[in-house]
Image (cartoon, rainbow, N blue to C red; front, side, top):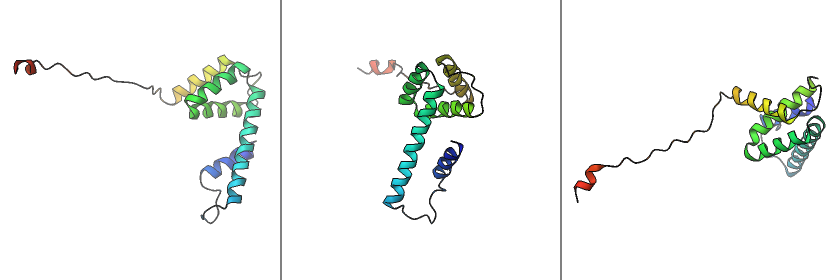
Length: 127
């Protein structure tokens, strides 16, 4: 699994193309096949180490914020590989992991600021 993750990182960083030319259709198919295999392996690992409730929450998060879901998935898989998980990841533990990620990101929350037009009393005087 670690080798597969390292290969994915190298490919994402541009290390996958020697020569720098256009990839052939066969190369693109191989890359797609590798990506699918990696995704399947990641999903099967998550099924083995998370409860159904946690997987459901993670899937809902992935719909809205795929990057955050990937970060949590990576956190869970790394903890499992290090042997830090004594039991399946529950929904409560998943929520605490999400809070850790939010804190690491600096607590940046979406903020909407509404600026209303101020009534200009001078406009009415001109009529």
